Image 1 (cartoon, rainbow, N blue to C red):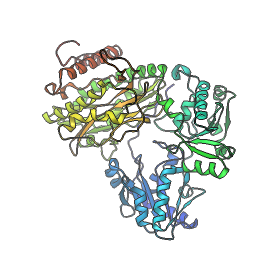
Image 2 (cartoon, rainbow, N blue to C red):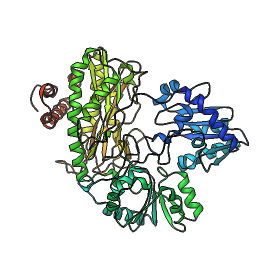
Image 3 (cartoon, rainbow, N blue to C red):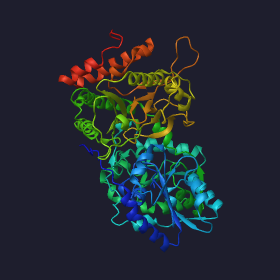
Image 4 (tube, one colour):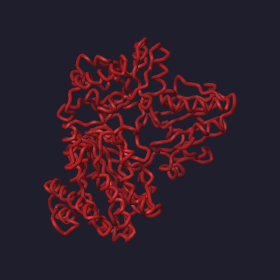
Length: 612
């Protein structure tokens, strides 16, 4: 049974929201004796994608991006976004009400230090802030002579008329045919890790960690099959899952068994207080300051440790990798049908970005295994393609006219795997510059795909391989090269990352990452090539002395050969493209027929003129 939900292209934000809602919020602040309030984008679970009821930043400001913050004072207000959302914030936020500020650098803390009035009281919801981020805000307020005050209830929630109800999607047991490991075994080894850290228990609020730990999936978060709740797991492997009873079926109760107690999420605070006298492992990157404060007030000792589920979840087992491979082949067939359509019907100049995204969604929707998209499709033509995190709307929608490039970044959620792939396609004849830039990006993609590396290597150490061809031409791109990907979970996960400022987490076998270098010419076009890859086991190299890991490819869909300048490729790079296209043909062609199959055969013909 499919749970697929079509992509929405209307952005539910805009300046009017700020004009309507800011007075309501200030009225609530006045009643509470507060002179201001800090509004992060994050919800209680630190989600990337929020349920409608948690879109507090959008309600207060009209800004609907996935990262940002705002501060509302009695006589002024500011919204903070990063470079991805500069244009969007200008369009959606009333600049007579909010100054537009940079989220990076000093961000909210620097603004507070400069603008908070001495003696004022500024509220915050501790459930929405990490302890480290909150420490910076507290220090900034002290510098200004102001006081930050934790609120018992969020004033936005009180001011928000007709606030959407919290999601109550039923939980679904995720079978071992997809997970490869029973949740009892998972809990046992997580409990052992907690004990090794010298703790009696761990508090977990990250939805993906809870889903993985209990082999459950849900539908509370758009584009991610996540259940919202909280958990406490003890060192003996027993656990308590705090979740709304409405989400729990008899099948889920049977699945969880006797070693996992079920309690309403409203009792999570009581559960934390019951840990009085215990050392409790808490991850400051995923658990809120409220969790730390509640434990400390109860007489427990919060021990700052990484979520004990994060690393095991990232290191996919053999079953998960086989599932990911199968999901990517099916997904590659749908994407190849779409690329065929782009190369034929969409060349007419009568197709727009929304129509293209809907076409791709409909082709994925024909797959009975599809449960949802893994994120809203980035469908960008020309200048819109030069915005790496562009989201098409009716207002921004462009026709795919001959003379530029179309960039499509998309993915699907399947029970056996999560996909994320980007392809760049010429509409009409590409220019020589476009072909050069695409080939430089391709060279970087190949460099990362082919690398071998020893145990202990981090993604930050490999990032330069993807950028080197662009660096040599005086070019770069402003985003990371690779993020982790879940197994029928979030399309973005850690702790691994391939980026200039990558994490210090070594890459380990089974980790799935993206490989997505790009180039963006502002106002003209964008290029990105993205495949998913996974880290292989260490193996000897003939004549070498150290076993080396590498990457194995997961994504199978043609690269557009009209954009490849073979004169810029080395023989080894040409061989890589030919071998890759042979792999696409071998896996995807059996799933196509008719014109799409004929097109794929041509699209996968060797660059070298000989069958690899």
